[in-house]
Length: 221
Image: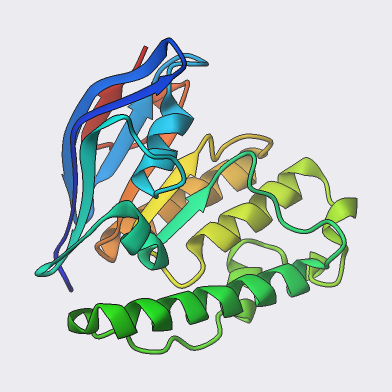
């Protein structure tokens, strides 16, 4: 198992005159769960998007170290999975088609990363479609168009897409949203499994109590 470390140093992010993130600093290592908690508007989503390169901070630094290789958030994207409220699957495709497309794109992305960072020694990963359908209880919806799904089933699909190819850094923005009790237990089990394999999980929520066994706490707002 490769050692992974996420280092966030003095991170600042501003929208106009509004300073959303002020000096956020923490370190997480393989198997850690980072609880990012705070009220609405405190910057939880902004922080997670800075961690994966979707947003650029105004100051500070984010690095993901994998073994002896240190990557910026943009360079690390092939090794990051993320669930965000505003990142949606295609309504006009089926569940099966969305997952197949996403898995193909992830595989291409990893091969490109491996060609740039040869020391990471990435191996091709076998298709995980059937495994993801079963794991997230989507096999009964495989041929349904996403636009016809309930909000809870759509959330399970987004979780499956976030976990595709077993990312080394998993970012979850309010993953319990729209889920019933079965779905919530699924999230907890998934996070535990990812951590046991050495991945780092960053989980953002307004409710600190729903994040079980967090090892790093980041309070915002």
